[in-house]
Length: 295
Image 1 (cartoon, rainbow, N blue to C red):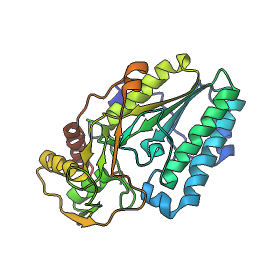
Image 2 (image 1 turned 90 degrees about the vertical axis):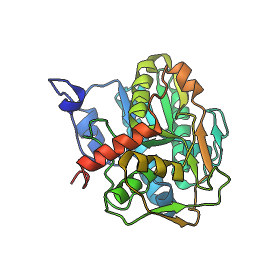
Image 3 (image 1 turned 180 degrees about the horizontal axis):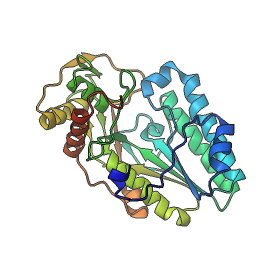
Image 4 (image 1 turned 30 degrees about the vertical axis):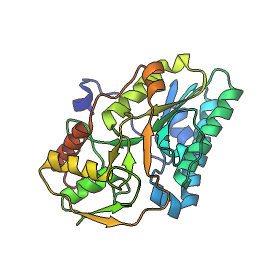
């Protein structure tokens, strides 16, 4: 971390535990440190897996958030930045923050339920700032090649799957759905570089004191890329050929999902700067330097 931050005195502390273990959260974190804000990333996050294991998703994502918010209330932590998802919009091709919330899979449903909990709690506590950042599709890696995705098993997300095919760990990429009403029949998503996404969180923290109550922001580029277009971009970045196998549509997937990020651009004074090509280059840099991930 020192090499990335450039700080001589690395004061970042780490405690490993489970968000559903309320005793751990209180004894190890809340009792020992005084802090003003919490950023919540501790969720299960795969659409397909959520369809197969809904109870695990509701328990970890929803119950875990309640435990965290309960302790934030007890210890008077006033700012909550939540890792939400475009999945709350369901099958909506272009998403605005005030569009209808209509998730079509358990993962998206957990995010929608948590946002409602945030609204209700913020309404009961006028000094509380609840900021929901609705991610579109994060991809890429840190430009240094020191931080990247390292799935434990077969990846649930597209970019790490492509990466593992490129590294020879998997024989081919399964493309789920080839008959969507899109440019080439494959699903279209708004892919955002993880560096831009990280900057969205720091922007939210900087604005948190002025954002009372519940506020939701789309974090995306506003541009769509299909599965096959992303594969082609990765092939250009790596010089490799990624073998693809076309398969049936996957339960819970929408055809097209794009952000309209105007509210985040204006209110958070944030916008994306990096491209699909940047994300593919940085992912391949990470993959080359770390062929076995965090082994």
